[in-house]
Image (cartoon, rainbow, N blue to C red):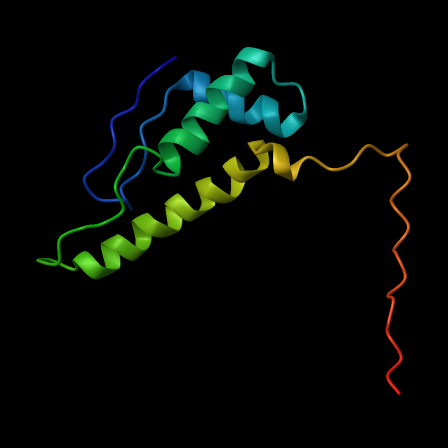
Length: 109
């Protein structure tokens, strides 16, 4: 898989090549191959969303804003990656959900 270099400033345009462009277009059209899907995942979630980039920026020249910007990118990646967790798997559609159990209240005299 290709490796892209993280930019010093989180707002700098990202590196890409024609394979990424074609993968984005194929994905949008619903025709992306397995290889294009994997390439786009790596580029978008791992690189563009800053998976391997620490979001903290020193506070010498606008570091607080740069940190917030980088943290926003990281947050998007987290929101996408969380769906890989098994706990996010929806229940099967043909399985009937459990009936709620009635509350048993004790009558007080």
